[in-house]
Length: 149
Image (cartoon, rainbow, N blue to C red):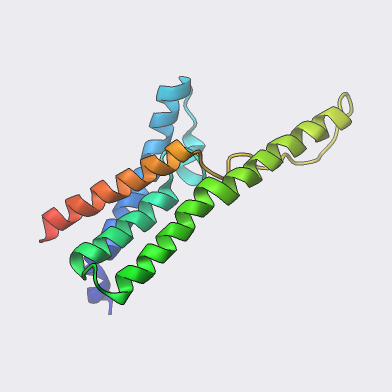
């Protein structure tokens, strides 16, 4: 069973895409803002979307290694579409809500010490961050296929 996992090209492709996306986040943030945010290694949000990179690389790797005409590829495609939509749509909108609620809390309690914890505002992605994740996932899957086949 462990041997099967260790030889699973799709698993390693998806893991590599996710890890590379997470690793790149602080460096891309620095290029954009000129400040280091090392916590991006351990958080959601940011550029590129590691969720998008993971599911797109898995989907494309399944197509390349198993076949594009299989039910497994169809399932991977459906899951990838849900995750990409969620990353760019639902989670991004939730981040906007958190941002506005945090402003309301600051305005409501200005000048008074409060212990209310700020809501996390970076929980989704911009369309560019999602596209970066999609492209990264596709490149990693194609590179994996070239290496393992």
